[in-house]
Amino acid sequence: MNAANDPDFAPIATRIRDNVGRQGFMNHIGAELSELTRGTCTLAVDRRPELLQQHGLFHGGVTAFLVDNATTIAAATSRGQPALTAEYKLNLLSPAVGERLICRARVIKPGRQVAVVAADVFCVTDGVEKHTATALASIAMLGEKAVARIPSPA
Image (cartoon, rainbow, N blue to C red; front, top):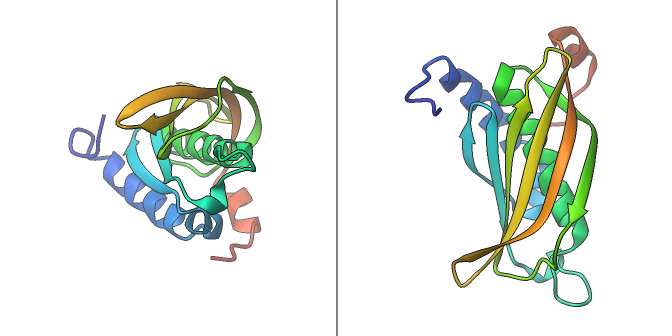
């Protein structure tokens, strides 16, 4: 469901997009928030030499970053509250070779304290997607008091 079909989601989406825009590492990596709906998030990054490992594949750390960020953002959209990664299990399925790396995350079980979120990562080559990784994450949902105690550098 998008902001047009869910008017209560519009301010949540705006806040999340603003927060993501202030993340230094997102900007450093060159990742973009390409899709955001309640309970879902899609992040993508284009191929650049700085993001590759010695064999010319996307570095596993880039895949892990996309999973970490996309699952947290998806969880935050589900309840409209801040969230932090508690843990995730990442399975690298095949070499991440391609022009673009895309991570699609979706909430499996929203919760007041912990959300369970799945993510799949794809590499795009000549318009064709290849599934390169899958993950399952536990995301800690934060209350406003906890957020107020965390200083923001942004």
